[in-house]
Length: 108
Length: 115
Image 1 (cartoon, each protein chain N blue to C red):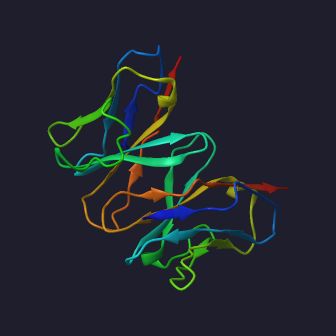
Image 2 (tube, each protein chain N blue to C red):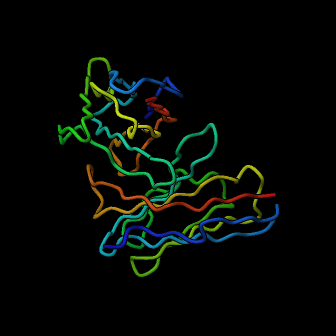
């Protein structure tokens, strides 16, 4: 079965601290992994996806097939990073399987 | 350009009534998706359209839920005989086409409350 697990409901850090939002997945084939973000009062939007291997707003995520993980990292958190973050998986179909999300709070 | 739009933005209804939720995808996007976001459940896939056909309806929770898409554009999600557990935010997304790796663009959602 396809499943995405985000173990932390809430992650609180101070500005300038490193951030790691955890994501583990379960899928027998070759998945495509995404991170979506929802800022307050805004719609859900794509942050990054593993096939692009890019850094967006200072965030990076590496797909680790051995650990079935796709953790989201940023070395120095900013207040504007406060949002809800969802990890998602696309398997052999086009639908997205989402995790339950992690709320990131960055304090000044 | 215009993004995905949904209407109404909020809907309050009484248990047992039928509701219709509308989604206008980005122009030219052939793929359209419906998801449900409820407390404690995260985001759940409901149904996927490629053009006017729905190759994946696996997420529809019961036969009270149905969706259609006409003209390869607008889609309507209908919930019959609503129940309180149907209360959630219903999100629509569209993408340029099927196939893996196509970015899905989300609408603002319709917040449904069943009393």
